[in-house]
Image (cartoon, rainbow, N blue to C red):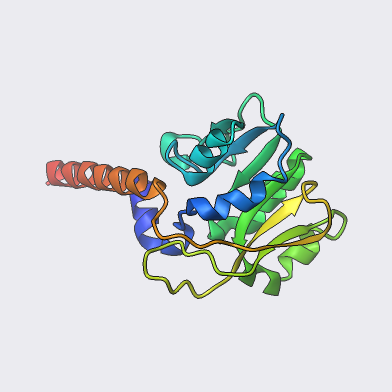
Length: 195
């Protein structure tokens, strides 16, 4: 219920990663790794693409009752996902607290903040930078660049990758649209019954 309100008010957090933006991180993952995608539905391009490449994947999402700050799967080796942008400091603190490798796709704007310096002062930040912007929507005008902010994953601190931009939205769009529609109908029903 609250999530439908959240989606409506915080659109900057709802960026669904297209498949082509998942592909560059795959070669840096151990083939034996069980990947946790903590901000993803079953139709997330992270989940689908990693499974296509024969990784063991466990996924979770706040909409299915698995809040990242309260839930952790029983077995996992590395986190790979695109987290909500508005709560990035707490997300990175939790990821660093696990002591395991991670790759989080984030806006490069975050490098203008003092938080990365504070969080990674004693731990190594690794960046996987792209030559093009990731198009999270079908408008072809995303106003920011994105990179994978990694820890204990890349072979060196800064790695550059070419991005082959393809048309088409993430399949996760459909999941979230359905969920919001369902939650909105449920909320409207409850409000109508109160009257």
